Image (cartoon, rainbow, N blue to C red):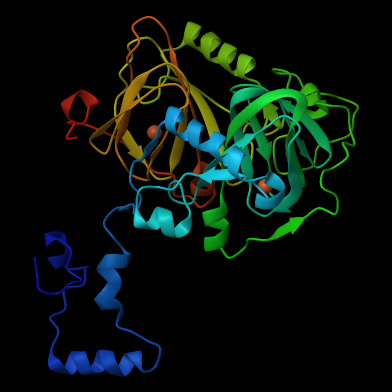
Length: 379
Ligand SMILES: [Fe+2]
Ligand SMILES: [Fe+2]
């Protein structure tokens, strides 16, 4: 290692990398550049162009039992009319997570709990949002006038720019869901706008569940009702039962992915692509006893255990999980999953920033080659 802080490892000593030895004349030149809002690129080049991604975020796990209790405590302490959105934020266990209010990378996540009869006031933002329902009965959302009912393990969209409000029917039960948004990305891009609706809640303008009932049919699409011209999926909500059944049908004819087991994408049926432009989501099934091979890739992934028990090894650390625990895998971090139940499948919901990586042409993946595809567990 050199005294020069721009030399980060021995590979930086080769032609093509910065390995300037500073002199008094150069130090004076750096001062001169600073006086002109300028700098010497070679002083920072190695740091800002690492050999490979070096995430500022850490693998982090949130236990459902603990987080659920905190959500219920929030219900007792603050009303949604005051909070705007009564959300317990999931902060990545890193300075970057706390500073950017990020769950991992460019992603935000929180847990929202609502009592029967409560509403989250209507608003919209350029950040896209989606939700995974964990508990309750009678929850609903209204997105641009479309009323959508929500059940356990359903996945629902709130694409960017759509008016939305949520609530739980007066005869329902306390409902808790996980929110995922791309707030950190929108703030990084300096493209974040926010507006509140001129009424506390929208008046639904269509029959309840009109979009999933119109567009949610497997392999068929509606004719004669006018075209869908929005850049996001018209299905809006993806029901748990249909998603689970799709995984089981897939497992009848395929071994699935060595890295993810059997996995499906929540897709826009009109394009086959992701359901929204900036964030994607998947549901995967790990068959009983499965231990996947490790891989790593660009993009950040936040998991919610939809069912079962097991563990994941992330960056060499083992994280044990059970139903509705939440954990994250930062960009370019090795990860593999294990279903510890010898008789029942485990299900992992996850959301990610893969659509951004793909749009920018930087979705890159690598398998873990050594040790039969399994990381050494160091913690
Ligand atoms: Fe919102
Ligand atoms: Fe992965």
